[in-house]
Image (cartoon, rainbow, N blue to C red):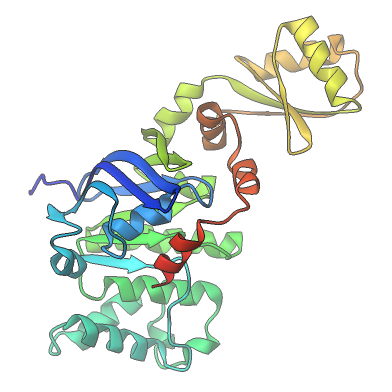
Length: 327
C-alpha cells in the first residue's frame, strides 16, 4: 500500500490583508483515516480546507494531497478529491439524479459506467428511491446526503467535508455520520472533516483542534481527553463570586464562571461533591460532574470554550475568506 500521506501540510500560512487566517500549521493525515478539524467558526478550518482543495492559494508554506502540490498540480489534485461545501450548492429544480449526472459530465466520468455509479452512491446514502424527485422536495438532511453522494461520484481518494451537518437537527446530524461511517467502509477513502460540534469529533480517528489559525492539539479523541485528566464540576450558586472566593479559601481551588455556571477541576468529582456541600458557605442550586470532554481539551489549551470563542469572534470568518469560499 502507498504510504504517501493523504494530506501533508508544512508551515502553511494564509493572510487576507492584515488578517492571518492560518498561522503556520503542520499536519499529516494517513490514507484511510477519518480526520477531523475541530474548532470555532473563524478558527481557520475552512481556509485550510480551501487551500487543500485548490480553491485558495496559500501565502506561504506547502500543502500536498496524495503527494501532489495543491498549487502547482491543481488539476490533478481536483481529480483525486471530493468536496462537500459548508454552504448548499445543489440545483433545486433538478432531480437528485440529474444533479449527479451534471456533476459526472463536469468531471468527465466514463459514460458507460456513469449510470451504475450514480445508483451505487445514491444507494449508499439512502436516496435511490427518491432519485427522480426535485431537490426542492428534499429535507435538509437529504440534501446533505445528496451532496455527499455527489462528492463520491468520481471515486475520489480524499473526501473533504466542510461543516457537513451545520444547521441540521441532532437526529439528522447523527444519521449523516452513520452514512459517513458506511461510505468510509465501502469506498475505502480518506475522510477529512471540519466541525465545531464536540460529539461529531468523537467519530474521527484523530482530530486537530484549531483556534485563531493555529493547531493547538492533535491526537485521538481519547488521548486528548486523557491529557486533561481531571473531572469537571459545574456548579450553579446564589452568588458565583462569593463561591469562587470560598473555593479558593476552603479547598485551594481556582474556578471560573462561564455560560452562567461556575466550573472547577478536581481529580475525583464524585468524592468532591459531598465535601463541597458540607463546606461551601454559599447556596448551591445544582451540581454536575462530568468526565473530561473535548470541550475540556479545548478549554485547557485555549482558556475558553468553543462557544465563548465563537461569541468573541462574532461567529464569522474574515470577509475575504467568506468571498473566496463562495467562489
